[in-house]
Length: 399
Image 1: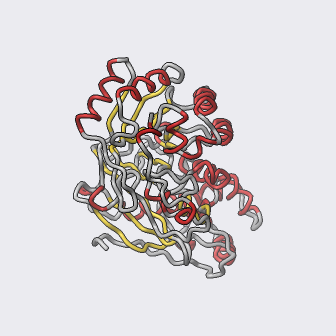
Image 2 (image 1 turned 135 degrees about the vertical axis):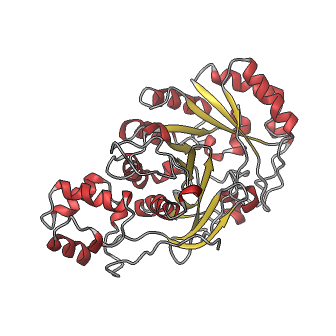
Image 3 (image 1 turned 90 degrees about the vertical axis):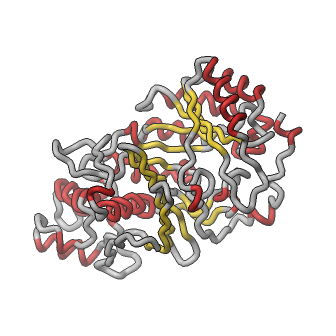
């Protein structure tokens, strides 16, 4: 492990059934503390102690009454994730491997760049979608993460990064609301782009998002919290009503025939349904566009004809395209498009007036780049047995 300080995480009550307060949003926490006579403002105090001061000991919460602290210590815990390993890239990217139970581990990535610090958070142990260009998909799916396990990744990262020397920490408060003089925060953006499909863990995801947005917790703006989905249409509609944040859609193909192979969920929610859902979401979104993520695969989805098909999509949905160079991993025989091909592809889109960026690869020397995250998952879907050849996408299938 790289020599960064580990935060002390000592559960006050070792009972496994004790509620972990990291998993409660303000409404849920208010209901919980009311059981011990706590007023709603006590919930806000707890949020500030846990998420702004990274507290894990009730005894340290000196503005809470002793009797109330005693009740909390008897019945609750504040328990962060268990660190298994940490790796640090030459470009400053940090990857943490967390054990979430005896059978599963997940990965979380921190990406510093300029005045922005982005934390990439996992939502599931493994992933059931099974995209052939994604290392997580090769592991299959074990279970959804609890809200405390989702938020705990942010809690842990904030705690560790705050202990770095000030000259090594991003001096940014970008995107954080609340106090007029908030402390410097290393994390200005959160993206739900780690292991798993966030919208297939919807009921645990939404409370986590609400904590990220809450001024008494992390105070991030809706524009700086992004949920990435492979296209779970019904849950996109629900998110637009329950907690609309920035939306990124893993598109990766411009037509149904190819997308059926690259993003198997397309067989259930084809492009026409997905694009209609994007337009419905935009009525409530904090941004006036959807980001379409598009991984560049040599000879598969990177032809000029595919770019012209994307232009047609851009005429149907207000969007920007984020082209992602494919990051290899051992189980896949797919190849990254050449730099010249990526530039040509991007230029076709730009010439048509479509906002297009090419994602800079970060953390690939520690397998922390897009598509490379793979913890340690007890697969109960047996994907490896059922679909051993899912990387073998032919040119005929790619159109």
